[in-house]
Image 1: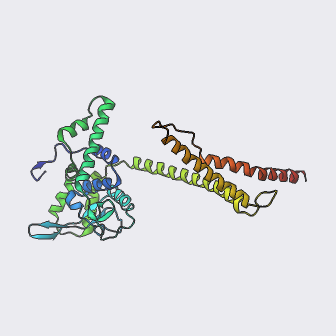
Image 2: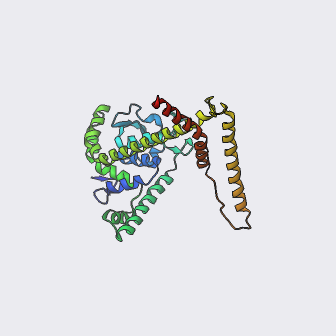
Length: 320
């Protein structure tokens, strides 16, 4: 098939190269690339989309409503869809924009939801990722892999993602042309059966592995938080549980000692830094005390009489 005079059977960007490029860019660009390769929309059109143009139901394939400009004005065309991969990246990207509303742009400039994304920056991110892959392959193997040789010859660009869509959605696009004016569900089913199997390129196994890794990190983080909470609670117990020192029954003195220790350590750290900067242009890093370490030592020292008292109580209990 020939689209716009270009033979798309030649030099189409490989899905494996798209995956590598996507891994090297930020989440906004990941989403932009994925939407582009699963819809065939140009960067100029994508940058004008608003959040309200995306079906809020999250049904996969997920619909994108858009009016395309023609010489006769605007006309309604068959709806566009995205698959699981584009939807996942898009959802992750929108999660970073907490205050975004349906009227805001789908892709926006950083910290400005009403300013269109600079597509030159998106194109630059694509090119830089590709260049990095090329360099890594040359360094690692001392030669060029097949896909890199093809990329250098073809000079793949951001628009290569449109060519990728057109090549892999050929059957879908042909049936749309032959069956105009159908309902939305017809097009959704057609896209799911004739296009999506060729446009979803990321391995489900790799995605599951990534999810397991993320789950493991979250579990480890929760364990760390639990340990830190226990440590902090032990300090607060010593300071404010009205038991205080077992000999005096007062807790204010213990709290004051912690506060003074903290102040002294910070003061000494600041002094060490100033002394280093004033040492006649010669930087001499003086010993730097670790506040957490010093507090831990002091905590152990303060807790010692409590621990001893607890041990004595247990010994008396067992003897009895």
